[in-house]
Amino acid sequence: MFALISSSILLTFYFIIFLIALIIFTIAGFDSIIAINFAVIFTFIFSIIQFFLSPFILDLSLKWMYNLKWVEYSELPTYLKEFVEKEFNKRNTKLPRIGIIEDFTPEAFTYGNFPNNARIVISRGLLQILNEDEVKAVVGHEIGHIFHWDFVFMTLASFIPFLLYMLYRIAYNLARSSRGNSRNNAAGQLLLFALITYLIYIVSEYIVLYLSRLREYYADKFSALTTLKPMALATALIKVAYGIIDPNYKTDTNQSQENTSIRNTPFKVLGLMDNKQAKSLRLALLNSTSNLNSTTNVAVLNNTIEITTDEISTNYDVISKTLAWDLFNPWATLIELHSTHPLVAKRIKNLKEIAQQNNLPFNINIPTSLPKDKDDNSIDILSNTLIDEFIIDVAFQYAPLLGLLSGLFIGLIMTVTNQNGFNLIGFPILLLALGSLAKWIYSYKIFNPNFKEYKIIDLLSKTKVSIIRSIPAILKGKIMGRGVAGYIFSEDITFKDETGFIYVDYRIGFQLAEMVYGFFVTNNLIGKNATIKGYYRRSYVPYFEVIEIITEDNKVYKSYFRFFWLFLIIILLLIGGFLTFLGLMPIQ
Image 1: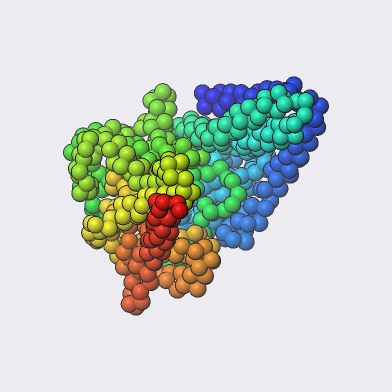
Image 2 (image 1 turned 120 degrees about the vertical axis):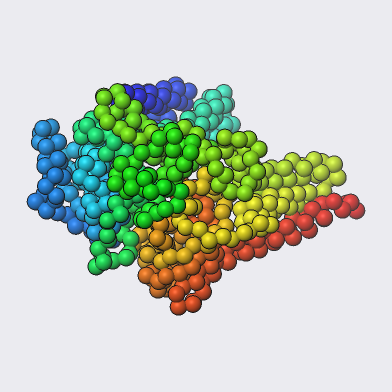
């Protein structure tokens, strides 16, 4: 089903491109043929070169920057070696190169041009954290990408927006060149088709992301039917996304604390998780007792994750709450719309359906309702839903834009009324500043900061949180590494307490200043126990916007980004207020 839908969409869009090119040719004549042919041929050649060179460039990047080691099959665990050899040999396909990143973070992805020159990369942590069935399920997912020719498919899919944008520019330029001559009618038609093509181009960007998500479902299905253990892939997804690992797992004490994840590479790879989704979901959940009774705790940590309907209604555990954000928070839908991978909870639901259709065991019951317990001090306008919180969030998130548009409208009316052009500038700036001030106050909970000490696992269980709706918090633990793995200019950090890991976002406001801070300061923080104060938020991933770090040696590092933001708002308020005052004065 996933293959049929994705292939049909791809062919449909190429047919649309053909029709648009044909219409432009019909209207503009021979000139358009030359323009279209040259542009398409140039872009096609460039894309082909990029397609064939990118795996080799990525090989070098992985080797030099991410501590990757290519290994022989004899160096792999026996179960993994036999699994990969079996799947490739029965399809008479050359065995892929296997690379291992020496890092404890669970990681898996594949890249290449065709099945015969594919690479599969996994991290050492993946082999340590997941059990044998889960490792095979994850590698099976990557093999699914290879045998589904997803390298080629997604390259063809990504080519669609390029072609559409090119056709838009060609139609627009031809329309401009046709003005003022005998072909004014053709110019109008070309402008119309330029607008239509541009709208289709915007839609195509989202269609490509949708196709990518379909191919992920398709790879999940391949893994489930190849291993006959969809439950293994589901538990692997939960471990990789939310970091649930065996309590007996110990990291190598000789291993560098620098996180060398490949997730931030500029090249596209086909991995288990979306880069944006998995950037900071580094939870360990070791010896956790928060919201878990002893029976549930033992079940979770022994890889038998049981989320039943009874547990949802009576003891909504932390795993269910974490999944619930994906399922019930409207922000998650917007996030998935811009993501290459489906949300984890939806993938688990799909795996459950595959298991049921094929009479395969599957013991995870997906939560069907929000947690009944109150997870913050907000007032519920609508019970059993997060729609009310979402509407309020959106209002404050886009308050600056609303202020700007309102200011333009009011300024236009006032300009027409008193013929003073300052109104058209002053009102938009003033109302933009007021909207930004409202967003700033809401985002940082200025009137009710209430910083409380939390464990990371407790923050992860919150459903009423977003990029704008924050939770003021204090965390105590240890700084484990840089936020952007292996990047020497990364100003952000990875922070760990006894319950888990979280990505900590340190902001200054100037990119260059943040790079300098990352180069000279961040490395000195790694490995130190610390208390951090800031705001927990959730966007593509959960993250912590830090405002103060106090290390074990009593050194204090503060972020003044929120005050820098406020300073800019005050400047806008003063400028907007002054221009508005001038605009309201009668013209002499």
